[in-house]
Length: 218
Length: 218
DNA sequence: GGTGTGTATACTGTATCCAGTATCCAAAAC
DNA sequence: GTTTTGGATACTGGATACAGTATACACACC
Image 1 (cartoon, rainbow over the protein chains, first blue to last red):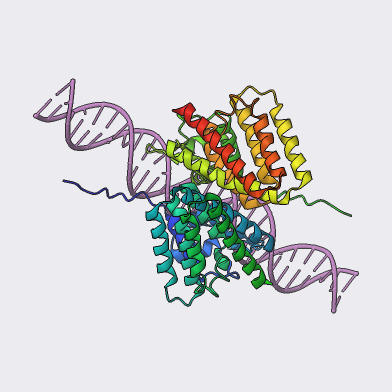
Image 2: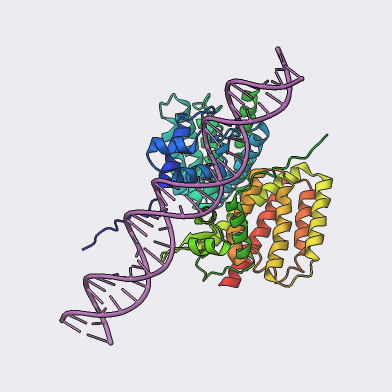
């Protein structure tokens, strides 16, 4: 007899709320002009304010939301300077991931990366979110393969902050089809086994993304 | 008439609790065998459970605490594998900081770094915490000077996780007096303006710390 | 003595309640 | 018409109340 544990890791209601809000933000259902008020949300979801409050505060702490002076929470409006900082932080995490992958130079991981890129860039998506997601999945895969929970956590943390504006995709979507070569080139660099080269290529790739972003914003 | 704003940025009670707990952990007042129970803490601090709960959950989310099966929270016991990951994450953040500082090669910042190292290593401290703190301040200064809030946030996040074990100081304290040269060498590398060299030196420095840590544990 | 079962206890998550504070609006004063 | 000001309103943070669940302990049974 081998019964499976049923308890499915004690889920808090707040987590549910958190996820719902996150996906509503990602899908654009919640926009920059929406004010999120505890009471309203609680009523809508037919639960009490307590778990809603928790979820909102967590999103605030993560930099996705901010308190509005009129009460309630709104999407955090990132400044131009912060965008630069965010890209720098991204570079730190992802380039270090690349460096590690290069030093491992694991054939299986490399082909896994290529497969992911292939798969995600072949999606026939038209919406911005779809592009954002594809790009995110590709970049995330590099970090996942390092098998370092903290790096991955930092990665998610950074990308979540850009979520409301699809920051890291706003431009890349324009020519995502062209960028296939770019992403593959990242794997190429890793495959040389040259740590420094791999790191540099990543930093450059991200720098390019930043430049495009900036020129797009004006 | 120029009156100063009085409102002193709306402080939440939960923040107070958070800080008290954090410093109690840092000072060792709260040890690995202590169980933190909402009701008890609330009673002790003479407030309700609500803000206590918030603070505890925040510490849990940050990886400092974890829920005990018997209820309550306890210090998160980091595994050996996680220590490796944590050092890797540190390397990502701090080496990228070094890279940026090298590219700026700002004389003022460099001397600021030297001053900090000088100051902190001259403390005549005997306690582990004091050493931990000095080391933390030194390393933090590098990241601060990059003026990137996300990098700094990641730095704090990482170091907070090691807090309960004074992870990053456990060894360095042994020969902190010898390590003055080491830290100064970091600045030297930055001062060459060679981005890659600066990055590599940092990675190596952190790697050394990890090796020492491991040999001490194992 | 060891093993299983029922019951008390401890502690949590969620709901509700209460009090304070900031915002908004509209009427009064200039 | 503009500014001041009193008061209603909206919303939050914190306290309290409630109910469910997991752990621990003691007693019964073999």
